[in-house]
Length: 495
Image (cartoon, rainbow, N blue to C red; front, side, top):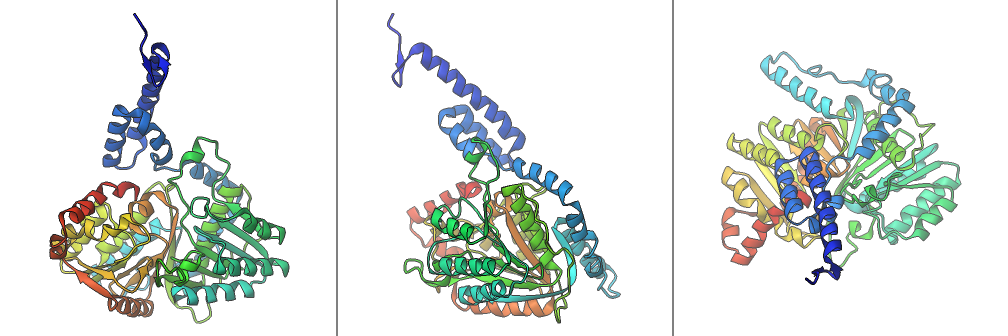
C-alpha cells in the first residue's frame, strides 16, 4: 500500500507532526483554562485550540495570555531593592499629605459613611492613595500640552523621566528629542522609555542621537526569551513626564504630529492632558521607576521621594498605575466603582467604547436609577474597525437611558470621566477591554469641586461639537452596516 502524504510529508512524518501539534494544543488548552481571565475568552481559546490547533496555537502564543508574569517577577525584585523608596513614597514622607476616608466629611451620618467607603475603595486600588496639597491643571489639545511639557523639561535641574507609548520622528518628535538632548547637555539626568510595539516606526537613528547626547534610552520589553517576546498583547500605554520629582505631565497625548492636528487624513485632534504638582507626582514617578526597572533591571538612584505641597495647591487626588501584572483588574474596577458612585451624573469621553459586561451593566444601572449618563465618542476614527464601535453597544445602552454622542470636529482621543461634582478621572486608559486588562495604563483621579467644574466646562464645549445618536439611528442603517456593528462586538476581547 502506498503511503499517504500531507503538505509534502509522508504519512509517518505527517502523523508525528500532527500528534505534536495536537499535544501542544492540549497543553495550551490547559493553560487557557487556568489563566484566561474571562470565561468567554477561555471558552473561545479552548474551542479554537481543540479544533484548529495548527492555526490557533501561534495566535495563542501572541495574544492568548492576560497575565504578565515577567512584570510580576520584576516588581518583586524591584520592591526588595528599593523598598525604602517604595514604602517611603506611600507611608513615610507622604504621611502628612494622606487624606483618610471620611476625614473631610461633616456630620452627614450615612452619607458620610458612603463617601468614606468610596474613598477607601479608590485608595485600595491605587498606586498612591488620596493626598492633599496638589495642584492639577487641565491641558487641552496638543499645543497647550507640549508647550507645558517643554517648559517643564527646560526648567529641569536634576532629572527628567519621559515615557510614551508612541513616539514619531516628525516635527514634534524632533522638537521633543532636542529638548531632551538640551537638558542632558546642561547636566540634567534624562531617561527616555518607550514601548516597542507603539513606537515600532521609531528609527534607530533617533534613539542613537539621544544616547550619544547622554540621554539614557530604554524600551519596555525587558530581558525576555524568544517565546515571551511573541506576546505582543502586553503594551505599555502610559504617557508620563516627571521633572525633578516635583512636577509631572500625564494624559492622552503621545509624541507625534497627528496629536497636534497635522495629519491631513485624520484632521483636527482633540485630546486632554494634565499638569500635576504636589504629592501625586510621587505616584507617577513610582510608576515610571517600576517600568524602567522592568525594561533595564536598573534601579534609579537619586530620585526625590520626599513630596512637597504645590504652591497654592489644595486639591485632593490619587494615582492608579494599572496593568496585567495586577492581582485585581484595577483599571476596570476603578471605572466600575466610579460609575456606581455616581448620584447625579457620569460623563465619559473615550475614543474607543468597548465596555466589558461588568462596566456595561454598571452604566445601565446608573441610567436606570436616574443618573445622567453620557458617553462621548468620535464619529471618525484612526482605525477602520472602530468605525462601527459607536453602534456596537448602542442598543443596550440606549434602552437603559444612556445618552451617546459622536464628536464631529475631527478625531477625539481624550480619556476623561466626570462623576457628579465629586471627582474626575483623566489618564491614558481607554474604555475598552485592552485598557482594562491588557495594557499598562495610568489614571489620575482628582477629588475637587473646582477641578470638576473645569472638566465640566471642557466637556460641555465638546458636547457642543457632537451629535447625539439614538437606537433609531442604528435601526435606520443598512443591514450590512448593522451586521458589521454587531460583528465588531465579537472582537471586543482583543480590540
